[in-house]
Length: 295
View: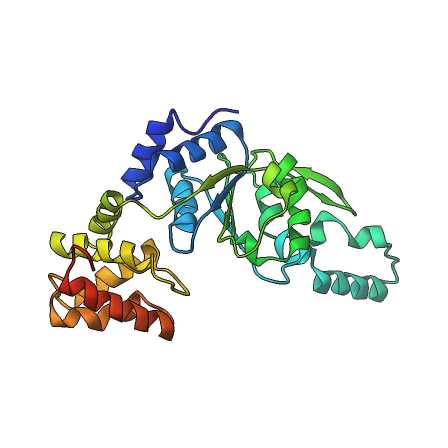
């Protein structure tokens, strides 16, 4: 399989061109996934950019993005394939009207098959391999993981009535997880793995500077520093990169040039998303404003 990237540095450059700043570890993970043709499992806290990374990968490769959003109770008929029951019923009625006989095999053909995201990837016949994003796999039930094993291991889906479909262009599969539950070893064995951590201060500043160009350097520096400290609090939902960007964008919208401005506290609702977190963040923010060096 020909790699879609020339090197790890090529991954960094091409993501950078799409305004996504990859760290070296993430770039290596995407390079290996593309080169080895292996699914990639991205884990990390909510808001660190796992989903955006997969979307950017599709953009960088000029490939279609097919997304499967996971949730409790997700089934085969919603993720892999289904049958067009209305069309089958219509065919039965037409056959009855014509006095013709229909067998079960007549009703379970490709003409009645409905491609869901995973089978759509396997049956994709475009010029490039698609990118399949299986988002928040940890939200699905344990049993759902077993349904993915054939696809993750062989880029194939078996439909009992029709046989096994094998991908002509094996998709690049990216699975994301917030670790709300442990994933099975069988799934992990089929994937390359990478943990995306919160960005270090310098990279956090660079990310925000690109995303919120209207914010001042002083605002970005102090705001990202405060967010890093807020993550050390005992919060229900520690703020991620997404919340940091939202908060600084809100501050810039309020024409706040520095956190010492009185209006700065009004935008904390973009950072803290529960009443308890809001109270804790307000206290920490007041301490930080009094003494940024130790607050």
